[in-house]
Length: 143
Image: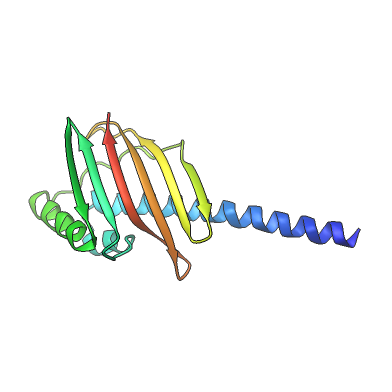
């Protein structure tokens, strides 16, 4: 009976850990989007993995745009915030997150209803560093 209790506790602990990580991943994505729409540059960049391996891309109206590495991503945001200084409406939060977590990596796919830019599908990869989830990859496909 003790062995069963220990095994059950371990399994439940792993499940709760995965559930907690998924909640934290969603929180990171939500707060990053809010910071971007509110034009809070320092807060926005705090949600990103600021390394050369980070990547961001958009596919819209048969156009593909990519930012390869943190320097390009950061420059894009600086320019965008400078050219569009007013806060924007925050897209409706997704209810259909598909999340896979393995160790310190998370892969996420979800759809967003965005009244400003149009409906889109987002693909994100996050890495957990010192207990915090950071976005390292973002690809947006507009419908």
